[in-house]
Image 1 (cartoon, helix red, strand yellow):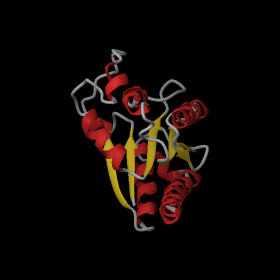
Image 2 (spheres, helix red, strand yellow):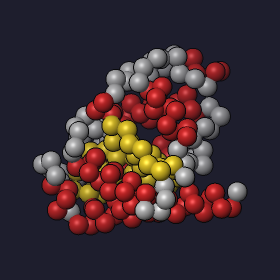
Image 3 (spheres, rainbow, N blue to C red):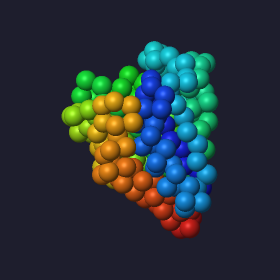
Image 4 (cartoon, one colour):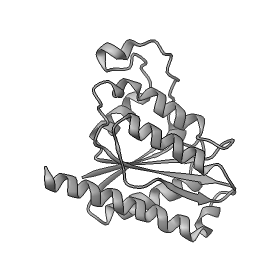
Length: 186
């Protein structure tokens, strides 16, 4: 079982990364192999809407998203994390969603167990979680919750949000348990 964490933030070591790591650590306790992608380390261009992927199922843009595709396709479960920017997902999160259009054809992400962690200073998590849940449904993924909201403005502040920490851990656990049950049934 492989659980992938994706941090859709331009900041390394920030609140979103802290919580995604908490989720992955909990999944690892259920014998999941875990991996982490930090968008801060990647150079990914936006979708150009060229339609080249419609017939081939492969994006024509050659950049770091190629590595992300490989990890998305090999993962059984995925934890997505994003800070809230102007009451919605970050540009990196939207970039990720748009660039998975090539995977939409053939429903290549279908059946992947997933969840989202949204981190806000005060508000905006509802929009983020709604956006991710629509993405999950569009890709035929299996969300294990409506998403996790956590709060913290400064780097590390989220560690004071006991509910956010607990919820992130619970998300990692639920993803791992759901993947395990899926594998047992197949």
